[in-house]
Amino acid sequence: MNTKNVWCAVPECTKRFILKERYFFRFPKEREKWLQWVRACGRLDLEPKGPEYAYQNCRLCHLHFEEKWYKKNIMRARLHPDAVPTIFFGPSYKDNMESVETRQKHVQKHIKIEVKAETNDNAESAKSLLITDNNVDAEIVKPSTSKDKKEDMKLSESSPKKNKLRLKIAKLKAQNKTLRETIRRLRLKKKKNIQAKKKKLMNKL
Image (cartoon, one colour):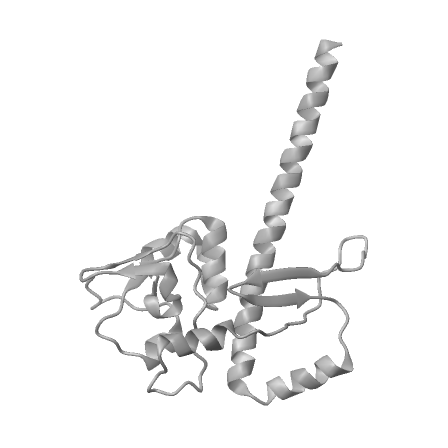
């Protein structure tokens, strides 16, 4: 692929890494998958523009995907349709970047993240939601302990960890939103099926 006029949509990537052999992938057109990409890479400015704009004008390079998600040959690389970008670079990353495998270990490192769950309209207490992604378990719960607060203070002192945490939270929020939307659609479908069955039963009577 001719990369002369193609740029990676991740600003930090564009600033820090200049590679001759870099492969670029279009943003997906499917809305839920597109939202995952946009929020994972921190390009929230693309949300108002929609999937079609991102598909036509934006690209992510292969550095942001685990190797299992793409296959390369001499001419091009093919990305798996279920791939989601998970590898990003904090501002303190060294210019002599680490190997892909090392960066993957940094991203996949087990971190428990606690954020306040959104309350329901009737002020129902938030339920614990366990999300598993890339062998990383994150539990979203409402209460926090003094031990957690001390851990947060330690993280705030370390810029790389802080940036990784922000990226992971953004990704989890995107996945959480996708799950809620899927649940909403399933409930709506179930409701319609019940109504259809009732109507059919009434017609028989």
